[in-house]
Amino acid sequence: MNICVYKDAEAIGTAAAALFAACVTQNPRCVLGLATGSSPLPTYQKMAEMYRAGAVDFSGVTTYNLDEYVGIDHTHAQSYYCFMMENLFRHINVKQENIHVPSGVAPDLEKECADYEAAIEAAGGIDLQILGIGRNGHIAFNEPSDSFPPATHTVELTESTINANKRFFASADDVPRRAVTTGIGTIMKARAIVLVATGADKAEAVRAMAKGPVTPRCPASILQFHPRATILLDEAAASLL
Ligand code: F6R
Image (tube, rainbow, N blue to C red; front, side, top):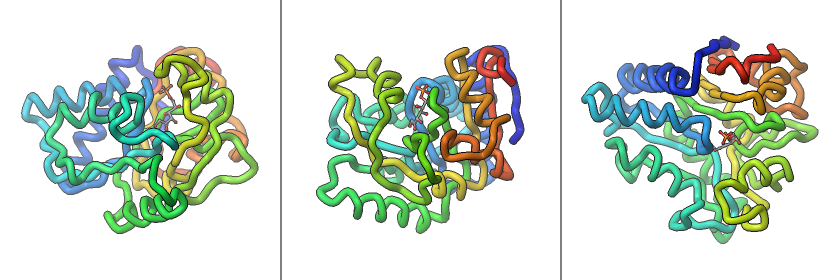
């Protein structure tokens, strides 16, 4: 993995957005893998700025998001679909029909997972995937476990993740307990990956990811085996390396 340390979240956002701009410029019909949460927000702001400046055209791009809460539909304000609309999609010219976020309310969630995985493959696979990292080392909603999940699946969220995400909800009790998430296998098939992390509360997870053993107890550690994984950190997140 290629680890770069920047002075702050804005500088990380500029660097990550440049990777997206390069991907879209090289292949205007590329497939982008996107994440929610706080970490990618500066990247999305920079991508929107580049679009407004006429530097990047997203009209041919297809997007697949990593995950969605179970039991929350895409009109719900806390859905990851709404998050993406609010923070990226409505600020760039990606076509509505090219946007994909898994459904957390599909009547048959197993089928939804299989269909989502198949749709990514049918689209030609993900060219560039952005990731954040959980304090427990999760990527997407692949929580620490005994094995690396190969494909899109449903998962029970850990207390650590529920606690970290309660800031988006009225209370911890309102945070859904389950999610649909792409698997570690899905993520590792991306041709290139950029993981962004800031702040001291991510330092231990970043250390385990980059310097610890490759183990499903720290799902992000699998990125040590990705040939094109770029890790963008601020000094606080890099402080235990
Ligand atoms: C979001 C996702 C999660 C987050 C992670 C970090 O789609 O899949 O893995 O990337 O929980 O979240 P933040 O960036 O809010 O610290």
